[in-house]
Length: 112
Length: 112
Image 1 (spheres, rainbow over the protein chains, first blue to last red):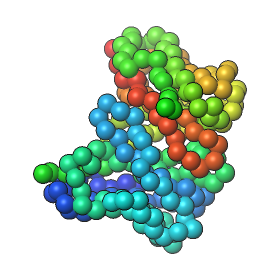
Image 2 (cartoon, one colour):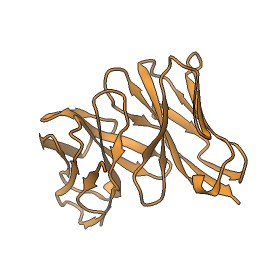
Image 3 (cartoon, rainbow over the protein chains, first blue to last red):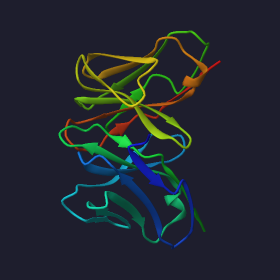
Image 4 (tube, rainbow over the protein chains, first blue to last red):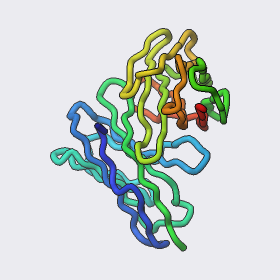
């Protein structure tokens, strides 16, 4: 049973559109929520991260929205570009040490 | 440039063989991780180490063991390889608190 549930499994977006990926968790001990981006043949790399004391964090075209009461968080990619085509993983870690638990991943394809 | 290096990109082993996957990091990180990545299942944590000679089981430790005799090196051992261990294996390292985890490029292991 996955501790972090991610949806959708795959996503197709037109260039310039908004990509939205959602994650949900049950363990209330989680208090660090990063998103990782993975290109084919490469290891995942950190994209953006949030802690539950804020509801939103924005870095460039990438925004994390966090809903602590619903135990959900999401990644929004504004003005999606073909270069954003990759697999995206949400993750969560319990407080105190960086033991990352990942979601199943979303394969994003941005069509020109 | 920070680096996590996995000893092999591709490995083919026979059923029943003892297999060693090696990982070295040059960032003086306390934490090191082994994940396996399978389509539709994301990254699943096999083992986690937060200090030399310290280890903690992840979600799927069965059939695996680990060794961390030096801070920079974390080895994953498949005691008796089986075909269901055919997968992509990813090593990562991080500082002990909630910060970026750096991944290696992965080892694609095929057990025949």
